[in-house]
Length: 586
Image (cartoon, rainbow, N blue to C red; front, side, top):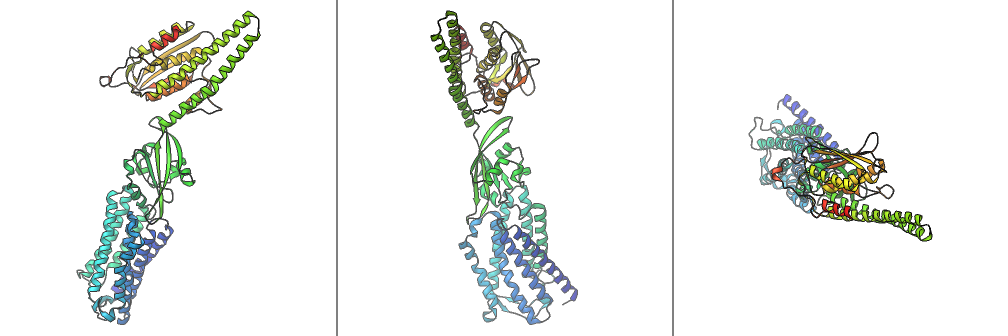
């Protein structure tokens, strides 16, 4: 045996052992990750194989060579078993890691190990052994026990590699890098070992498997450094895919045990505004603090309010733990269910309850108080004044009840926006208001046509905004209605020179909800907001200089009039022309 080959071989084997030992340390630092313990077992086997083989190659005593060669088969037999278990954990096939499966799969390796250690008695594993050979390798003649071990080991390796290959096919970009390296790293040593067994290598006495394992160790280091191997593994992703999260209408986020995002479906990417590639591997706190609070507390549900597709939407969050069949916790699944419609109904009930509990009750108290004063006084002029005030409050009470009725009528029906010309709607509303409010000046600056997507509730929207401006102005009032058409939609502006809409009412409408301490004084602006939002538009309020407010309605433009139908306004809808004319007559 040539000394340079011995030195080179021993050096490579020791380097392989060093790399394997380092990978064992890395694996133990990530022991909470599924499969890390089995990966550590694989690297321990590589370490022992390399060390014992180095001792075998460097030995000059034939008896010691045989002893080291026999002992080397302890890690050689254990390595395929540990590799198979690791690949099953990595790819999420954890049913093969149950105690029954592990005991059953260990049967052949155990028999092989017993045959190796007792071969001098029965010669089943090796039928003959030559004390020494080239490069410290005994001249063994392999027996049936050896081929049983070889076939079984290569079967485990093949099944494990196919499992990783299936993960490669199904995995996202980040995991494909991991699995591709694992596949290459798997084939290197076992191809080298197969060539050695078939005696197809120039130096047939030298087993190149540990040398190939050195290259495998380097590939593992690359996977750890660049692809976060042992840090992000797709087992949680695989488990969640079993419930087809990609096809869920709800949003779904899969987390590992460190609350990092393993995967999320397309609905979740829309909700949070992150692409799947950008979100994968990031801490959950970078995406949503609400989700972090849900995971870190004992609660299993929560709510999220966020701005999606130019609209405020509400989601109910549910957290479910992800565990393997053996009960090992591997992460969480967070689902996000859209409850915007439910929240809208709750907001409607809040306003209606406030209307009944607060506004109507207070107005009734005022009416009763004035009636009591009327009953006590004897002055006719005073009585008439009290009566006028009582009548005014009663009328206000009836109007609010009517608006509450309109709330149910307009919002309970199913709205199907279609193309409408807003100009005739505005002109009809202006005509009604001229009759009802003769002291109010209303001017318009409109194009010939303004095609928007809405329905016949637009009559009510415009009339309510004009009424709101008039009712809150003492004396004469000037209202200007203008419209501009842009690329993104139609903007309708209704400006008045009255006292303006109080800031707290603007805040309530912007926030979209009321509280017992902060609420609006009426229901009209709520109706306007709900209708415009249902048309796919938005509403905001600006200050008018030097006095008053500007209500700005942003509506969708009708770009395809030939494919939509025109709805005639004023037919059987609260707030339509026929209703308002009847109200004016009454």
